[in-house]
Length: 52
Image 1: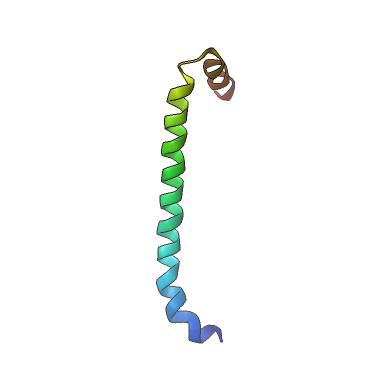
Image 2: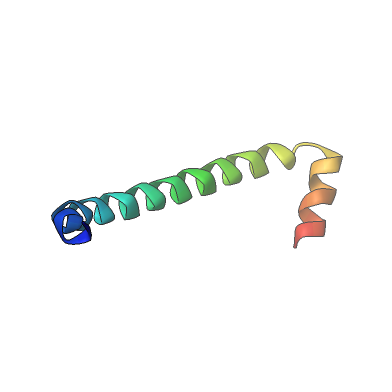
């Protein structure tokens, strides 16, 4: 059954990789935006200092 699915898997694997990369970039951008908000409060500054 796997040889029958091979053409589909070959086409879907790059799409999965692009999707995973897009999710990673989205999460990193959200993390950066969240970090900028933290720098405006004392607790945020302390939490950033603990991470670094």
